[in-house]
Length: 212
Image 1 (cartoon, rainbow, N blue to C red):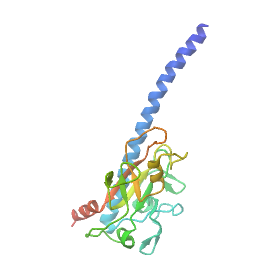
Image 2: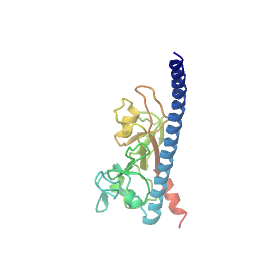
Image 3: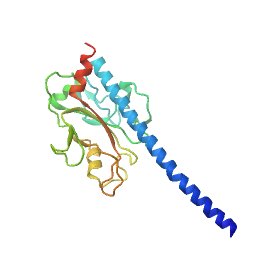
Image 4: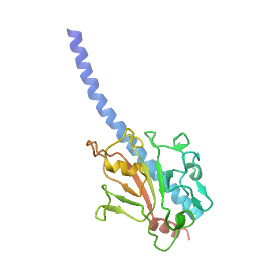
């Protein structure tokens, strides 16, 4: 009986320790994902400074190289062209992944016949890419519009698997043009664990202006 009591106490203590450890690991992974997204964003800006344009997204079979047909991109919603950018990160099946081994998505605006893959224009370019704080996107909940590019880490549920009924995560998994960025939630039907960063035309023009 005494041994059983001891085992119950030990079980309770271990259970109490495991929850904080799991929470700490989740916080650490989210920080690592945020840092990775910022590193990719900076590498994209660096590519603009060197080449005068953004790289095309990589495909599932291009092994981190741009998927490009001549001056045009082969797809608007794909993966990070890590080979082109020289990013040191985890790679799985030829695709750059986040701390949860989910594919990091990279979407590039195809407006004006892939203008951002050819140059950074100084006149206003209207694109369909936008980020909102809830789905569906409206003028009232739009955080940023007419974007050049969007990066998405799909979080612990990796590429929305198992499938979520959350409209916000479904929107991001679809690859745009409407993306959702909001605080994480575990509420059934409204789950959200994605992380996003984006690039606006004004940001790219400003970065170019600093080196001229």
